[in-house]
Length: 274
Image 1 (cartoon, rainbow, N blue to C red):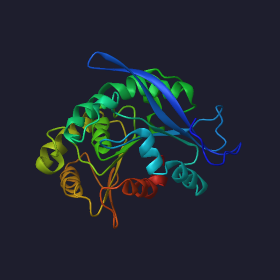
Image 2: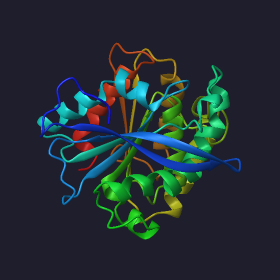
Image 3: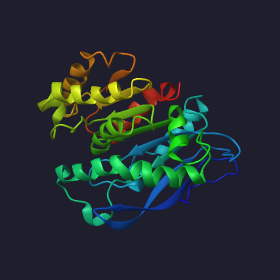
Image 4: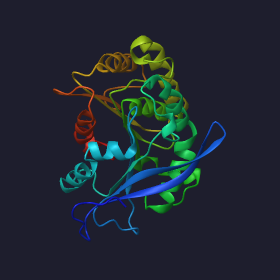
């Protein structure tokens, strides 16, 4: 467990959970941070949100730099995101994959969304902590999707779009911040807005009975706002999307910063599990 300055019996906690996964036929032992709200009770059911870092970052640094323990504590006190567990994983198999070329992260982002997230991370976390899933079979994880959200910053946002596209049956809410979808091509939100929007709409068409919401955010001075804006505009021209299930929040005076992620989370907090 990460050490807090002052730990009271009824205070929130940050724990570390380990799990095993594979990438390109090689096995990796990985860890994720888990925020448990104050007075966590294994006999209760909790909503759960997974939040992912950006390029060159880690779960621990992202969690600490965003001061997410304080953020979730304060949101709970305000009556927003009460009884909510937050999980902070990493998409890097290990540190050897970290480079300054974020384009090289894209295959890792897609692989994390395609298999690791649902096959390895969700069962590890939700078998240990109490959520709305009665067990960690795919049937129960799907049945509890209304109480599960996924979001991320920068390359974590690109991962979020992959999760939306590939795992809609497991998550009902998505919070991509400062990143567009690369499902068609790199920087696809700007370079291939219409094709990107149409491909994302295909996911909704295939799962027409599933309700969802995309709560997107970006700093108003962030260079990614152009590609995100173009993509969302193209998406809203399609029947699958509207201003209720696809929202866009520009964070005033922020650039490509974790603070933009934090403020987006705070802005949408009472809408995530409504």
